[in-house]
Image 1 (cartoon, one colour):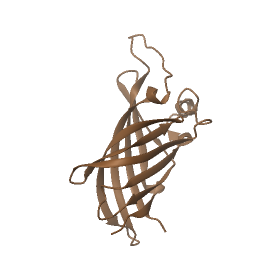
Image 2: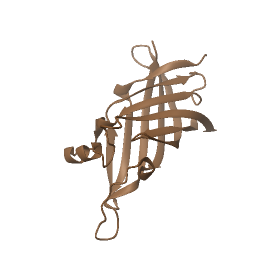
Image 3: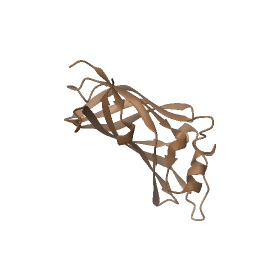
Image 4: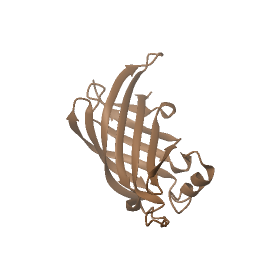
Length: 177
């Protein structure tokens, strides 16, 4: 099968994150608006290219005041950097349906290389007959690498917000028409 373009199904895909709060707690959040394309041969689903865009202002953690702060210049600076962008640069097989997805992640207009541990979860037909590619991927980044340095020192010497941010993606893609 030839390499074809697949659109990310934003209604059935998610970009989630986890960050430490007050040293031990974990705050979970998501971005509600994601789009992009995959260029993949359905017969070789662990190889191909990905371009994904996330609207920074679509961040949601369940706490309106926190979400407003995360949109501010202290964190994502959505006014000056409205999108988070990932563009793949290659893949490395890790066995079976697993692979490393190498690429460049741009946050706050700063681009750094990142490696996602990814898996082709399935190729499936939906009830309407369309073929879908399903993937999961995980990575961890250091937020200060992207210029996100705001923090407060706690009485115990720890930091209010951890430096490490875990990213988790669940992506469904459908053929481009």
